[in-house]
Length: 239
Image (tube, rainbow, N blue to C red; front, side, top):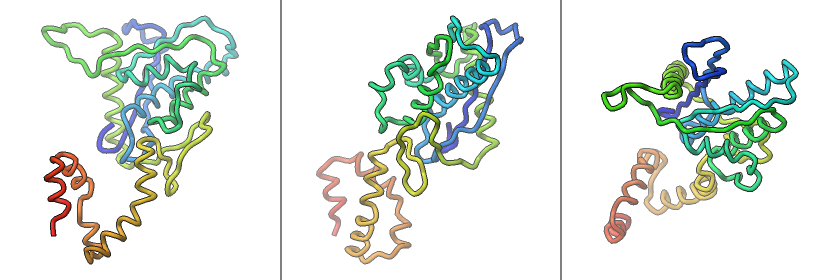
């Protein structure tokens, strides 16, 4: 995920023997999500969701209803792994205001009735061969490969598309036709208070729209958070 654009890639194979290419499948796609709130957790979770959907499609196609297979998912996002490993406790642990709840709920729906046991294992983010680490494990090599193909996909798709609700989403929040998947409390506060506050400031200062629009309010807010309270009072109350 970079500059508000996300992409995810996944590699499915029967074993970690990289010399054996039979049955290996790669998937890559642009991640949906508003550029202001899309997260790396969301893009990683979408890769996991793609795998779950693909495996379910295979089971349906071949009529597989029962399996003792153990399916291990290797990811470099620990929160995505936690959500997969605790998927059976989804109803107790998943709050609809949680970041990227829409994908988490879809993961739960995708695993229901699916044969096999799914577990997640963490892989350290992008690794390189060094003197201290002369050999990369197969899962690290594959993780690097997925980062590369996702990066290529992201570079080729520079136009973001809005987040969507997924099957399994029983609740979602939309503001101005945009599904909100992160910072829900902040988004609600902004939607409910921004217009009145804007009107108040413009009336108080005698500003026009161009003046308000010329101010980088994100930078202004970040600066105020970084300074001491007594100085903040002086800054805010400049006559």
